[in-house]
Image (tube, rainbow, N blue to C red; front, side, top):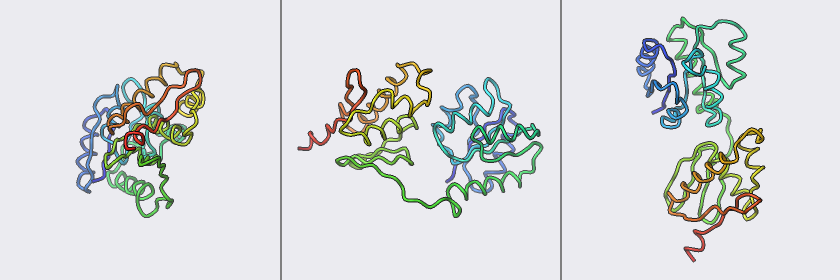
Length: 234
């Protein structure tokens, strides 16, 4: 069942939308922790997000940018703001569509269905899925999945970016600076320890698949994939 996540701090509006959308066979999740929208997004893994602009702590533009670091799923802004610049800002910050309040629920459903068709259905771009293989290890960049011997682990977008770099560079070293640029664009503003934390998370994903010591630290250079699972099978 396709999932829709609603990020709206007016509980009555959120519940009204949820009740209406569920009639059409969608699974709906209402976010209520406005400090940790991304954590909720990663947990729910929605196919589409309905996102208000005026939210506690951080506005919808901010959260849309964060979502775009994780996913390309459709994001529809729903807001009482009616200015043209608000709609421009919504699109420039990663949104796919904009609905103004007050709204008719049929319009919301039409927009949802349209975005679902474009992203996943009959209008979705047809292309061959990319797959990276290395000695029985299979990585699906577009699914954010890593597989080995029938086991599967899910990755965050940043973990997937690191995994892709390691596999593409193997057996060469993936440089620290190259990884910083790939993950954050402007590496000068990123604490070095942030990359270390993400590398640790990638190592843990290998461990979940039963693979130890798969990522080697090359002092002063970066990181290199070690095909330890091949040695174990030999």
